[in-house]
Amino acid sequence: MKNINPTTTRAWKELDQHFKEIKDEHMRDMFSNDKERAAKFTMQWEDFYVDISKNRINETTRELLLKLAEECKLEEAIESYFSGEAINQTENRPVLHTALRAAKDAEIKVRGENVVPEVEEVKEKIRAFCEEIISGERKGYTGKAFTDVVNIGIGGSDLGPVMVTESLEFYKNHLKMHFISNVDGDHVHETIKDLNPETTLFLVVSKTFTTMETLSNATTVREWFLKSVPEKEVSKHFVAVSTNLEKVEGFGIDRENIFPMWDWVGGRFSLWSAVGLSISLAIGYDNFASLLEGARKMDEHFKATPFKENMPVQLALLTIWYNNFFKAESEAVIPYSQYLDKFPSYLQQAIMESNGKSVDRNGEEVDYETGTIIWGEPGTNSQHAFFQLIHQGTKLIPADFIGFKRSLFGDKSHQDKLMANYFAQTEALLNGKSEAEVVDELKAKSFSQEEIDRIKTFKVFKGNNPTTTILIDKLTPESMGKLIAMYEHQIFVQGVIWNIFSYDQWGVELGKQLANKILADFESKSVEDHDSSTKNLLEFYLK
Ligand SMILES: O=P(O)(O)OC[C@H]1O[C@H](O)[C@H](O)[C@@H](O)[C@@H]1O
Image 1 (cartoon, rainbow, N blue to C red):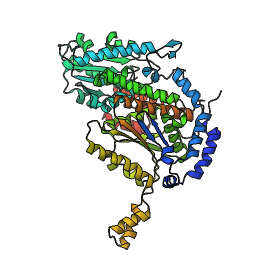
Image 2: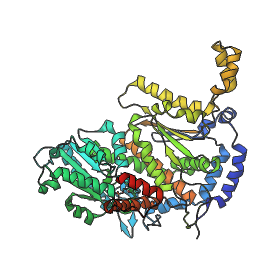
Image 3: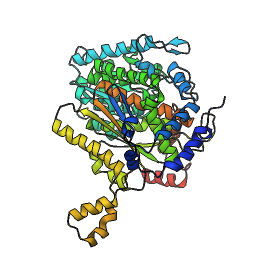
Image 4: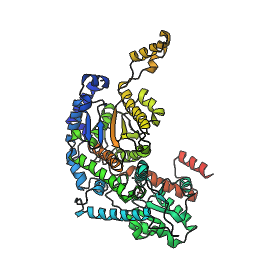
């Protein structure tokens, strides 16, 4: 059976027609014409309150988007996703990050075998290891307890761990965490320059254990370590997380110091596996388990909730509405929590590496837009940086506003100021400010008519800028788990509707291959085999 091109569905055609009717409607009017609008478009589940009413949709839009999901066989796709079918067809693998947080007694089969017991075994290993390191029972080679942990990894082996560790900083213990990702030697040396090898633990994290950056960085760190420590002590200070046990052993890390993972976990979805070892070290295993529990709850919500009330489904359908009908080019994610500083970068990999595809599941070039561009920064900082463009620029930028009802230190005065901004921005983006309002305001400030006529147009805000408000009770390991999993499932739903394979990343390969070629060219000092621009640049670099 051919996979469905979404643009050939009846729902898509109806959405096309519906879009023409609704595209110029102002949300201000939608609100004043329907007093129930907010209630109709708000979803509440556990500690999550998601209000999608400030979006350029009405009930018909929602129905048609739901019809699109049905025609694209979303329900069947969810079943295949969770049950371990090889939905990552280009790599012939299932996609089972959900198995990493499944209940202990769940049964999830990969190639005929239940993987849950194996997952539990690795979790037990993580728990025991973290407890020994945190308590100081397990020590470095001179008998001192560990004080610092360095995670060496890149992409999915870095972004998830660093983002969660920083997001949950409040729950952190005494261990100081460091992350080395970039092959930039300055990044490596800057990180290790003040570290004491006696009390530092290194985690080399790489699903494949073939990634140039991680292997180079790990080698440099190992050499630095061996400058002051005998080689036999490496095993006390270096552990690895990987699927590639032979390669890790080849690097010189003992088998008992390897935390395994599986090829059915995509790198950008791997923080729930042993890739999250740094998280578990930083916040303790019990908090790590709560993070997983939050994600498991979101998995249940996603599987069991009717699509109309289903948070990941609704968020995904909105992105399709803007991307494919409004032709919005990007989406912003604005967390009103400084702890979530790295959340937008984490989502960039999760979303853009997954859905940046232009060939559909039938192997044909798509004739519609796929993957959205994601960007963002915490509020209120971003208000003072790029919000001008969202308010008065020419581009339509739908934005997710993520906020928490309660702060962690309980400073109500700050929290109220932060949240006043959070609510005010979405209200301003919705309503804007009309010319009449501008004129009244200027009159009240005693501006002359001449001055009013000269400046009024610059002060008008059109409004009608869509936002989704994601309001969560409090930033905890569990709510963080739910939030991340919500976006993971949003990615899945987008992929199903766009009819693309979300779980491979062939596009990353070409650059890697060429980098290796250029590295070889540096050695041989021959740069002939390149386009003239690259050739000139290489010559200039080598001079
Ligand atoms: O964990 P590794 O095998 O070292 O891979 C690290 C990263 O490598 C590539 O860039 C992939 O595109 C990413 O998805 C992956 O997370």
